[in-house]
Image (cartoon, rainbow, N blue to C red):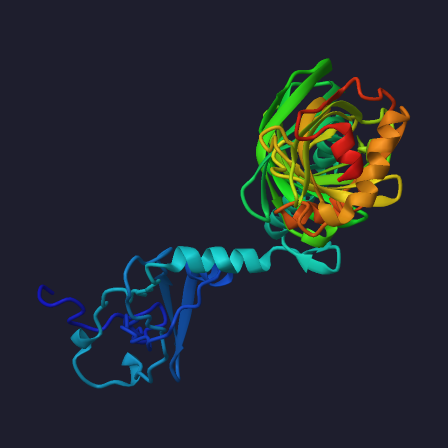
Amino acid sequence: MAGAPYSSQVKTDHGKPAVRKKRTTVSVPKVQVPAGDSFLAAIRSVATVKLHSPTCHLGLKSKLPAMATHQQEIKTPVVDTIQSPAHYVGDYDHYQYQPDSTFKVDVAANSHDVLKEENEKGKPLKKFLWWRITKKQRIFAILGIVLVVLAVLIIIAWFVIVKAVFQHNVNKIKMSVNYLDINQISDQTKLSSELSLRMTHDLSMNARSDATTAKLLYDGSTFATFEFPALTIDKGEQSYDLNITSDLIVTDADVFSSMSTAVMDDVSVVFDTTAKVKAHALGFSYGGLDFKRELSIEGFNNFRDPLTVIDHIDFWGCTDEGWTMDIDVNVTNVSQMGLNGIGYLNLTLYVEQDYLGYLSGMTPEVGVPRGMSQQTFRLFVDVDNHSNMVKMVTALIDNYVQYFITGESSYATDYTLFKDALAVMNMSIIYTDSTRRIDLNSSCDLVTLLTG
């Protein structure tokens, strides 16, 4: 019969009406998809859902997609209660096959990162020191430890090895004093000076140093500072003089006075110099290097050897107030310190142990330099001191006079820094040339000098 499909009953071999299978669309409830390998494997397999009726079984198969690319709903098949056609009286046309149900799976756009994180979590942990970490974490930990160790080694090398190499070469520089000249005294704390040093060294590399401020110490206490110049030092054995023209800044007047007093009276004086040096060598620069040297300087030894010599005495003024004479002396300064800028000196003259008068320096521009110098002093003997004057003239005639020149007067110098040094000065002069070096005039003859 032509017409609609299944318009008549279909009989089986036993003569009973056949039960038609109806394809049923099943609505699947919305389900959130967990991101993981287990679920992906499940949805890639074929899901089979069987529907049961009171009289028969309907088989329902559905293919699941491998992975969705947009957010969708997930529908899971459920069993609906349906009536078998065998018990249904009505139109069999209702039982037609319907389209297969489909699953719609949504995975978020950042699911790749989520899956990657899940995969990482699933990797086995390995023991590293006191922790259990992943392989990647262990690699980063090892790299971090290596970097820390390298940084520590570099710091140790810089502050220990490199410093030791620089300090070793600095220690190889030997230094001694040639002389120290005080050329001008600007005030009580600033002395224009020239310091000459003998430098000897044998370095294994070429090097140079920056200018720095050096300290001078006496008996452990700092008494002055000066500017030490920048140096360029060639490798190999070197020996040369380094002359430093600089201002000597007195930082402790009491210590300076003690030092200068020792220089005036002693054969030699030891003092120290210290500085912090920044050196450059082999492409490296290192600062804060210790430069400490013990320096020895020869003292005045109080002009004991050789003795000061009287070159000439000129009696040129004899009045009722007293007697005036000019005395030229040859002074030998054997020390390594020159007092070129000491200025006017007002010393005291004794004949043996008897006070005679004040000696006023007439050559302030000369000062007391190193080596031999000629000094001119003017002596005034007050008439009240006539007895000592007669004693001196008598000794001159006898061909032997013992003089002593001291700096005990509070007016010995205008510079307080050197007053203590001059106070200990005791210059001895022996004169044995009778009247051969003495000039007299008509107003000052021997009779006048002896009779007053």
